[in-house]
Length: 179
Ligand code: HEM
Image 1 (cartoon, rainbow, N blue to C red):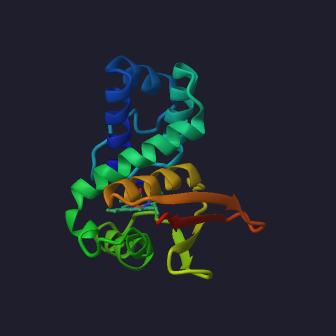
Image 2: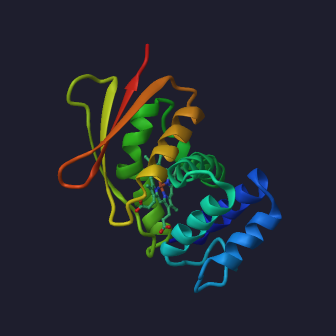
């Protein structure tokens, strides 16, 4: 997993909790990297799982809520770091479709070792209702929901989000525009 994910996570922890909390969770986690992340480095995604688990224990905040909140925070960081990727459209559902067809494609060109999820997108009922099936063996469904929430905030969109696990283990997100 790319270092930007870790550096943004620790920046969020510092801002929402404290620098002491950052030190505590790094010490409590068994991190091959030792917790010294650079934004261009690559680290095992299990390190983020360890850090979040310890943050949950230390703060009493449930893991899914921490991951979702982090996803939203991360979206705004990514949008700042890669402004071109959020400028192709002003429509939130078109943007979400572009994550698979454009944004992550470009990310893979920039970082060939990036580990990205796959999204199968469709609008089976209406142009205002986007279905996104998230597939990743890293199972970051909660981070994914947070990233979707961050996208909708970015575009100032009023949408509802529902999610359900399909029988094959993939997560279906349904994002519906509220008129
Ligand atoms: C400006 C927009 C975006 C950029 C630049 C971006 C870029 C990235 C990067 C660099 C990673 C880390 C890859 C790695 O660590 O190896 C990542 C992971 C991920 N991205 Fe995006 N992303 C964007 C928007 C989104 C949105 C809107 C979603 C959700 C619909 C999304 C879903 C994910 C998920 C869930 C992961 C975690 C890896 C996994 O689940 O396998 N991304 N993205």
